Length: 181
Image (cartoon, rainbow, N blue to C red; front, top):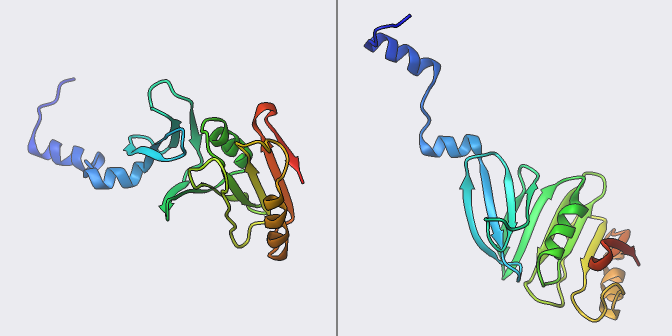
């Protein structure tokens, strides 16, 4: 049955299906795409038309891409990129980042809430970070140490144990394993 389009009908449709402004639409949808280069730097970021947080390596067309937990944030401070979020799959996120870049990453995790901070200073060596409330520390080596902790790693471990860190792991990319030390 055809119905004549009247002003009253248009007003009724507007009540049922409001049109959101672009800013309100972004607030409702809230997704972001981050493209990260081989050096761990954010090359591009843009809001998406989904509620997903996506990270893509090198480009957004055919490159390795991973969906991150909703609410994951990216911060760039003092030349360091820090990704913050909450996920039981934080090791998978960390593995994805390290396997698709050529720099060292570090990750701190609160084992009771799975809240994590993953960061890089965009260099092949010497990434270090610690966050209050975390008790697990992961890092990888892009250098000759590969799957062995360095003397500096043991020094850092000693300092972090003083502030409540209990577990320490080196991520070994070739075997996709976490080696405790």
